[in-house]
Length: 192
Image (tube, rainbow, N blue to C red; front, top):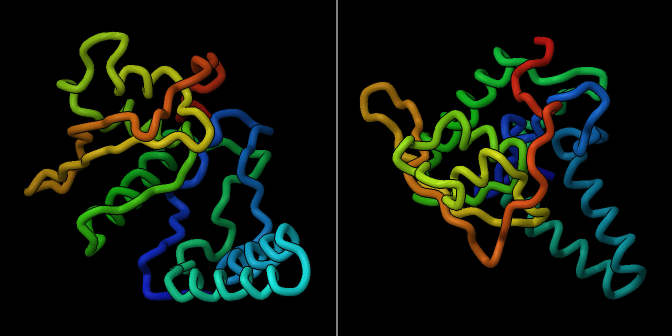
């Protein structure tokens, strides 16, 4: 499967941020079109044989027609024996925000990792968004977003330099932050 029409794009820059060696929520098994093939196989496993499997195949075919997997070629994940260092993270954020900036759609939906979102808020949120301990940006900088949590974020790009700034952030659908960051999650402190 893929590349599709690009309305769904797998971005290596939006993956988990690894702050400690050995930690990982993302285990790289597949790349490129193999990611879609693995998703289809897992969906068939969950749905079972016969009619449900055909539904899974139809759903995956429709998804693959929309999915661009070209950025997930090669080792798109950070190895378990490595961390994401400051220079590598800066390059990832440049790639990520360039992808958003030049995307032809007015709005995009990002599915990603809580530590990635936390680091976006730490680096790119407008100072005017942080006021007290209860504001959304302060919470997102200090805590993890709950699993399957949803945050609405507006990003503005400087007209001359293209630098991104988060100009609005709001919790959506009853989402909340959980678990204060540990001292071991000092993003960008690892090896390059």
